[in-house]
Length: 329
Image (cartoon, rainbow, N blue to C red):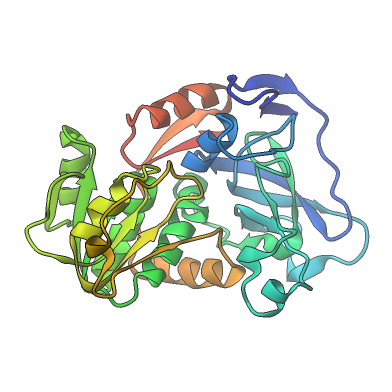
């Protein structure tokens, strides 16, 4: 099968003909219909996340069709020919204190699609049946793929923000353009923050319903109840704190972020807080995939053939995408 392979961190992906994977016990073989390109893929490829499996097929926002089961019973009620989504969290032990307390996203032994196990920048992939989300058979693969990370992590971040009415989104990319739709559906007001001079992203945010859009170093016209930082820039955290009401929260939604610079305690005082979001749980996926059609979430995408993965990654790296890039084998 055709695949794009990371052979060494910091280097472009290499197109290869590789053997089609065979599913093991409890796994399914999935024919990939679409795989969205996530900023986490950049962090893996650029070596900012430690110890990836190498060589590696990246990609963890996968939509495809089940072609075969591994040996043993067909797990989790899935069927041949069924359309499924495969997310970042690819396997957990099910036995540790985190798994047993509903916090499988923190499992010490967890494995991750497109990082510690091969992902979806390929024609086929295998996945743990427990971590495949059933999708409607008529689900449009390119539109659904970004929901499986940008949507899921955005949703978990939004839940962490509590019942905040005035919500700031720092970094207006794939996750933010999904989250804003959910937030507006819930009756919130959204303030969008982008790189200075990124007029296109600010206009995009306004079109989607933001009440204000400006540069990340600007103060919003009103203090926020919560802010979600999607951009991987630690310098945004103190800026977001200074834009909060008393008791507000800054949610850091990325798996990787540059160091947060020092800031005066007065910026944090009065019960402001900072928290991070790590991975996702299956419950997050089930809740969000039920909610998305009710909004309904409309995903802005740009399609790329599988062989153009490096181009899509570079466009993401340079901030030249509105919405999400999606690879189509």
